[in-house]
Length: 523
Image: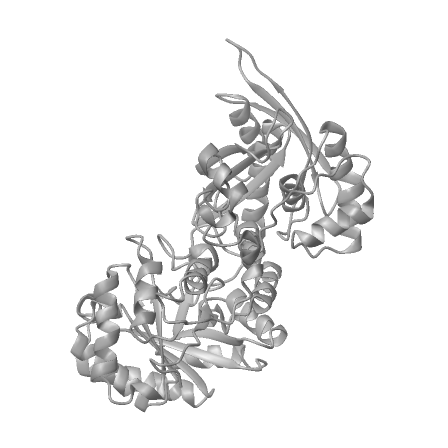
């Protein structure tokens, strides 16, 4: 088992479980498999694939990932309840390296108000749940939920008990992002000092970012002896999210002097590609100023900075862009480019497309865009793939639209849609407060799906007057929250594509008819 002296840090990725609990970030099976493959290539040690008891969809996703992923351990989450654990074990039946992750709240506030159980009952349930999981698989992880707010002496008692019961990993979470680096480090040190059998298990940490300290708390815990980090790509997750995988990994790689030479098995040159994939399938945009993988992370506008970089890169860059998979130069394509060059650049950008998808893009959207623009940049290609090659089952396709608007007039939009399965075309028109609102109202009339728009943003994908515009939105339909995006040189068309994409996601989710069987955790 890992100890305070070990230099190897295990990376437990929970993008597909905790990350997917971000509002609007729900993924279908195809998208989950795509992310799981990328995580395996990235080199993570454990993939937490889902919470099998919650729904048939989650169960099938964990089972499918278990069958395909071979190198990392595949983990299923379960409460300390027999039916949860049995369901997780069934989902992991085909896994080469199965792990069951059981959790139970331990903090005073959770004991009194959520569970209504005494300390002794919590210890008993933790032991029973751990032993039940150990009877199904050899690799069992236990999490005392809300550990950061649990009385240290009681937390030590629980940790000692579950290790004795067979837990091979014990995760200490800051479930609500309440702790600070000094306090969290002190808690981990306390456990190493007061749990006699702690050397028989790997101590992990799972930090949330409510106060913006998830990465700092995680790194502080590693300095105290923790040897597994529970993280998500881009830091997505419940509320303000989790510790970002790429930030913790690159902090260790960049500052070995501070962190004692701790190392992970992550192939850092794949970080940017993996980040972009997760952003694409979840619809959650990465902030431009996001550390490591943000658009501005290695950008320099200041004349002083640019001059320094030209003379010596390390004057203003502590990391080589290549170390995270970010190319220094942009390959420019145009209307005279060949299909081979087009395919090669897509491969370099991290896309794995079929011949039919490549041909469809090349002879369709790419040629059309190349005729509109003198130069087609990497960002244009990424936008094309994200816009045209979607994994979300689609019901309706946008055929065309017209908008009439002007000062003092009533904005009116006429939209034509085609149904994918029957090829039936329908057309309707509606008015709105503006041209975009008129388009949205028309789409609602045509599809019968009414959305409540909660967020709507427009930005330029590339620079210049010929730049493509990107529309991103988040919308609610009843209890469903979905995200979608659309890209076009026409911002009205981009908005129409985004709104129709959201409608298609709602229709796809309703078609799944998955019944939730238990509460989603807040580990």
